[in-house]
Image (cartoon, rainbow, N blue to C red; front, side, top):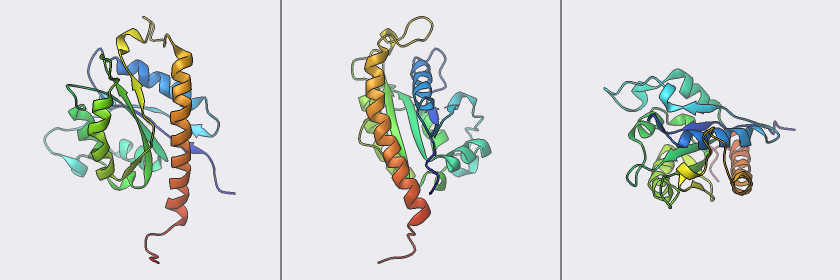
Length: 192
């Protein structure tokens, strides 16, 4: 029987100081790690040393590239900045291409306002497609993020977000499993 375990890292998509999305990313890592047959790690883009004097694959970070190659799926936690996504996240994502092909991605929007990052998710969808990632059909949204966590970084209404996370993860695990099988067993070379 094929290996049914999955590696699904979580990317924290902003390097800013005082970022509220860090608490969200830690909560998500905790929830993913609690599931059977899932392995995860937090990738903080703040910790990826990347030059800004060039772009794309010429700036590839070997560790980030190896992690993306190993990943069966991804979760990207991204704050909404003026209706868009952080430039540094895009800069880092663009350093890999073949590593993403036919892998599932779940998007988690974070905002200080009431939309919960829906606009940043909408802006990221065409980027995910261009990178070769397959977005799942359910997103996570964390609205009014400053009111969601206590001073210690603990989620105040944990049961609500655990329920949302269940649906999100069920979809991501299913899609990651199907695509992992497809990458291993279905050749694009054998055309019908």
